[in-house]
Length: 185
Image 1 (spheres, rainbow, N blue to C red):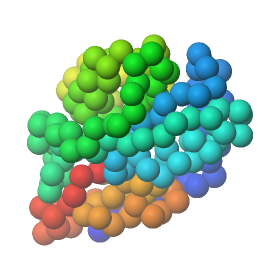
Image 2: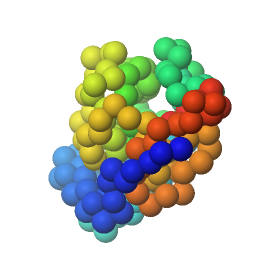
Image 3: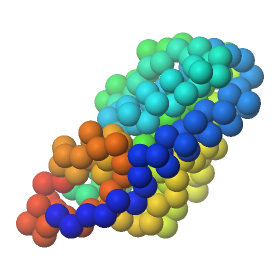
């Protein structure tokens, strides 16, 4: 696999701190419900929650499991919710956190489902935004970085299970014979 670093560890740390400050300034209260979309968001969300806590924010945290990549690098077009949040969000401030906004199908579906549960305030935050791939008209309220149309790994995102542990974001070009084995991003 060919690869190159797109976003280094220091840039990520700076941007996460900036996002936490921006979000903290917009929150209607100091105790939001933060819901991450597994599995790719777990590293970003952990750093974001810690950065927000340094600003006096005391979030309640939960995760949803949602996917639409399956076993390939191309989105299937079908979004599946495997685990719903167990939080009662009615009347509360909710921040949805995802790793990457690509086609827009996942964030759109999850946000719409969350709105049906009647939170008092809802915003979306994505670590990476890939607008060139958008198929659904959706934008995130908070964006860490915009990236080109390349496959990325690191900082929670993976290729066939590899790369999630990297503290930076890499663009990768998969080997032709491994492209069919690549897991969701």
